[in-house]
Length: 271
Image 1 (cartoon, one colour):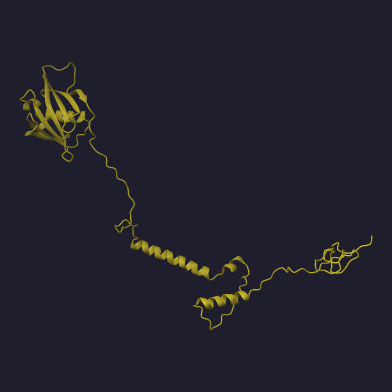
Image 2: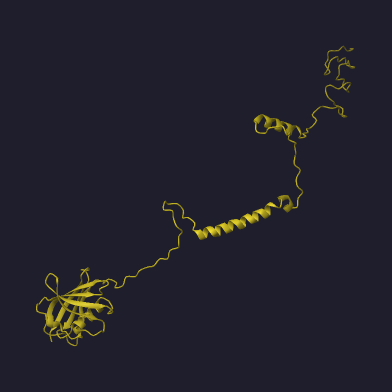
């Protein structure tokens, strides 16, 4: 029996190619199954065959087939639609996606290979595309509304209610803390504070009156310092103003005739 070799290519992928051999009496249902199997596609969708001219323009409809469902193509042999040594067919699969294939008869052999099972792939090249493209769903967090001018999102009404409750509770805590003085919490006596009576006739609105008030306040603060005056000591040195010290450092003459402060030698002495 004659063997028909068809070359199958994708309409949009020129580098993918499959050469498949069929017996002359095999049907378009066999072509449907083996074609999809050779590119790794399933058989869940409808496939449609057309006659094509030499420029791959669509011609007469041959038929439609889907998986294992009944179809006239299960009884339609390939040779019934071959009238050219380079016969061309068009095949469309899964109308939702639109996979399109070009099928061309490239060789007719008188006899098949010994013990070969047909249909069979005689040559192939290229990696076919993935039939189902995966769609990644990336979860996104719900965002509050934006004012459209690049500013921070505005708080929604329900968020405002929650914020108001939070601020109210915080305000209540602050009021409780205000009733207790810091000194009482620490167990310490309150410190003394300086008080000053402000005359009723003073107008604090002017700088002059404020200056007077500050000066009066400063005068009420008691300040002390070390007594730096020189007092007489009980030791033997004393100050320079002391009278009658041991060495005669005074204004009177001493036994050496010192007549001036400091014990000079200006006095007379016996040889």
